Image (tube, rainbow, N blue to C red):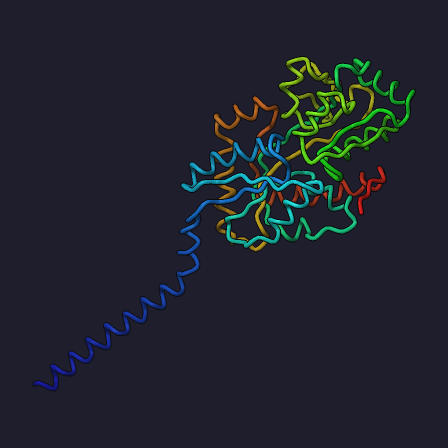
Length: 335
């Protein structure tokens, strides 16, 4: 009788032991998803590759504020400007792929791929696209002291004094640089390109008359246009901007087929776990489509997007190919 009890007791102990081992094994198998579900457990850095005050910075702060609310962790916007937005991109590309360091990227990065002869990263291979946040038209603006009321008069002025008129950009290889080069090519004029680190210092010099014009995004110059401190001559996209409905497109102004704008979006290092990228993309789509965020975008002349990682990846691939042709035609190259 006693041996039977001992047998039952031994069986019970073996059963408990087996169940314990099973639980440990299950925990090991579930470790990765359980860890991913815990993200984010600390603040997230959103890197802006331009100085504060420009469109990239404004959008990053708007996105960061809403992401902080939905993720339950602070999203800290950090500026790392320089080298036409490539320094900030390189920093993110080489950061740990854990979802805690993100890039507020832009169309500039697809252009830099062709403009710079050598970059320390591959924009299509070293990043995981998350979502395009917004499209922002660029606008040709001049200092009011410039004696040109429209594009035709500006081109006549540039042709009369080759190389004298200056246009500023957010840096070599940025969208503004390429738009300026395209304007020169299509308009048959020669101007002097002056690169800056971002829209803040660029706009300051434009207001002060140190440069003639810029092809910056609408966001940083819109208040100055409304205040009469800058004169808008044309937008660079193929349709007018709702923020400046009375300003013609460059196509309407005589440069037929001119259609260049700027998109902005969030990217992560390439090896970032897919579930984190998916979570971020879902949150961004919800944020971008909210009435509050759309109102903010209307106020700065931006058009909300909120696409998927796959759609953003296709957009990057298509733009990289398209701008490679434009860069070659415009003969824009940087060592």
